[in-house]
Image (tube, rainbow, N blue to C red; front, top):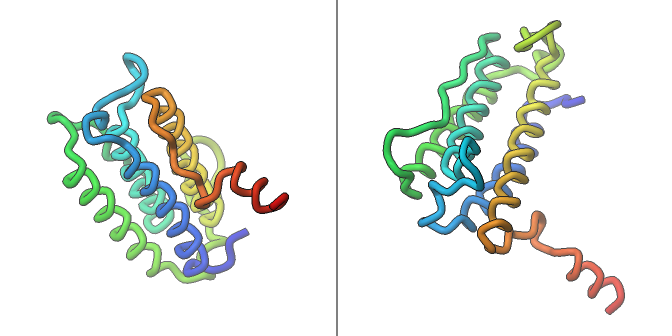
Length: 164
């Protein structure tokens, strides 16, 4: 269970930094690439993560679910995409900072079914981002770009240090 809003924001900051490393690995000319018809492009994944973060935080802070969408009418460009991504994140974290720690055990409506405690919604937001970051990792593999190591070291580095 999450006991502190500030601790969660710190934790989620790490999740977001690792996601940004994966976004940085995407070549500019591949932002509008997807592995198959009907699958999200890299840019749509980035917009989706952002829109979902706003959705989760809106549900947490106001009890209302709203998804703004992840498509755009024009081809993706890195700078405007990242500017919006970072702006949405800062707005969401500002909104979360206003939540008192005691509210983490309050309940909010779920999309389907029973009410859910706020701390569980925040964990779902984290899992959602990690899921789509993993999707980006697979996309990078498909376009033959080496995905970043999640914590800076690969298994090969760990083995070499352990046996070195």
